[in-house]
Image (spheres, rainbow over the protein chains, first blue to last red):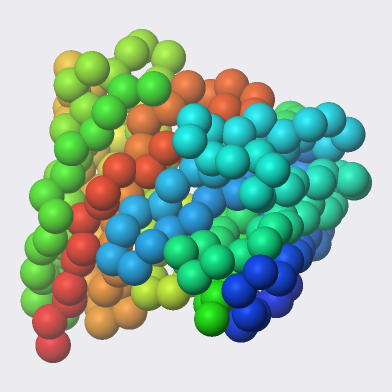
Length: 119
Length: 111
């Protein structure tokens, strides 16, 4: 199956700093990528949808200036948590979708996640 | 997309079949049922999906009722590695269409 990677897998930062998380589709081109966050013992919450070459679409309640998303190529999307605070500590997961005849059901392939801890 | 309802937790003995139910009574005719699972601190893993016919793959079987208002994921011979949270998701197959995760079922396989 298709492989999605995330980097870094874990990051610890100081309050007030910005953190960038990368999401890459390794063996396919992803026209659409999605970003989720997950708090302990909770379900995944969709944050935003990004399409290559266009602005991301954010879910209600997600601050677009706080969580900057860039989808510059068909294999890379980045999520930058700006001016991070302890309440931003969470598990961030990306997924990628290949929109083509090779994926007629528009299945999403998930990355392994990034654990962010803000001190 | 239609909402789903799953029991919060289930136990299953190792080697036995695990049957995970999901209710989706408001499902539309063009919505598919997807199942994913998430092992602790990992990204979700695709298991299976279906529209109205029962489906089987190397991981599991999906049984969808005739009225499509509920479905059951069956892991035929559960192992300890199947301990995970299982999510049932209903969505239209549209390019760029999102997945919205519910609360899922936490399955614990007991030795």
